[in-house]
Amino acid sequence: MSTSSAADATATTGDTPEAPATSPPRDVEGSASVRPLAWARIAVGGIFLLRSTPVIGLFDAGLGADVHPLLGWPDPAVASFGLGLSPRVVAALCIVRTLGLVAFTLGAFTRAAGLAAVVAGYLVLYQAPFGFTATQHLLLQGTLLLSLADASSVLALRPARPRSPRTSAWMLRAFVASVYAWAAIAKLRGDWLDGRTLALFHEEHKLKGPLADLLLGSSTRCAISGPAVALGELALGPLLLIPRTRPFGLALALAFHLGLEWMGHPDVIGWVMLALLVVFVEVPERS
Image (cartoon, rainbow, N blue to C red):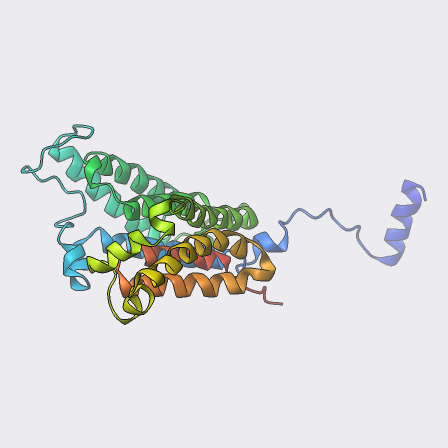
């Protein structure tokens, strides 16, 4: 059909030619695909704020002992072996980190606020390298990735237009899987696999309670639990990444972290991992 014929047919029927689609696909527009990322942002930001402010003392006096007035606040009595920043600069960085975390958690200028909190947080952390903990590193890494992801498109004071929710979700999922993989690789050594490390933790009451006594009450049980933990962490990544096995992976991860929290209460790292695990939740799009 010629161009003039097409125009005549359009005029006769009263229809207008369909304009080319310019709107983003549904999985970018819909809130369901980005909602788990927002949940993770709020949870991780809330835990980070709790852990780095004196509020943590209301829940755990032991953890709260190192956050007065803010985690990493300069102590003149402690010699610095890090970057050598002045106490005033370190105090200012602690404030910037905390204000950035507040904005990040609330979803106001999320990307800029989160990145500012991460930069300030690492500068404070490297000021005292002997105070480095895996928990702080995980909190900073999680905040960094959630700042870069589409985690503020919903449930935010200033919602940002999503760019690629699918890529954002898989970036966070790959990160969580890598945490389990590296944790498992670190345990692939003789003293862990034969149960000696777990036995020592149990003897020193770093792992205690009825569940710890049940699983670690003898050398034989420790020898069973050691490789079971390492292989379980090694399996968690694939279980979580494969959609068909994901429900089992989430159940296993939930049981693992709650059990470890019950036995050992290792800072807040278990709660951070549970907060990050929500990125594996699939929310159906409303029709």
